[in-house]
Figure 1 (cartoon, rainbow, N blue to C red):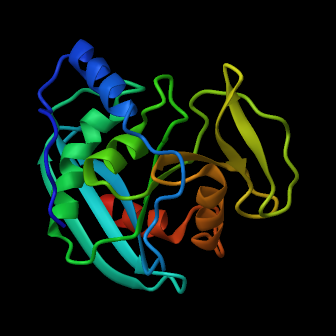
Figure 2 (figure 1 turned 180 degrees about the vertical axis):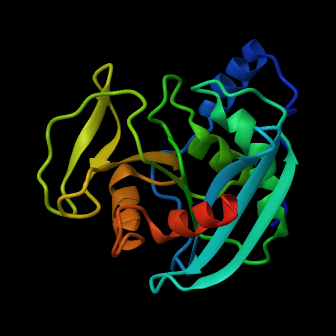
Length: 221
């Protein structure tokens, strides 16, 4: 993939907030997906040397059969501290390096993290989606902000994730009897479509196959 860099990554916190607010205006929350969807990708991060080195992984799978097609790994010095709400500035530089290495351009990218389920509606899935102009979905393992009603135990059950009277995502039961995951729009996709693709990418376990494979690569397991 060819990546265009929109801004510097050597930033102060105030500069990072300004970029989030500026680029958030470019987030598209309706379906702008190339059809048919043939490839889905997962991206995830690991850290080495006590966090000094970022290790990014990309896994591209065919869709809908979810067969692994291509992977890439990129490492670089970590240039931004760990601050909740600003993880994209810590993680995306290495993720862009890894995406540049792949030959298969995915139709959808599933990110291990938040999309618009973020205080400024600009989590890592939004940031990455805007930078690469590919539909992205935030699939988080834990709640960051918002509240929701209790949902049923059966696979496919979901409830809106609400924050300040706004629906910012969905709390989704991806496997019967297992704790839910948190799905939110990243870019160029609606919430309902995001839920559908997440479920199609999650045939057996709690997390999507894209995330599971990328996590193993990022963790060097």
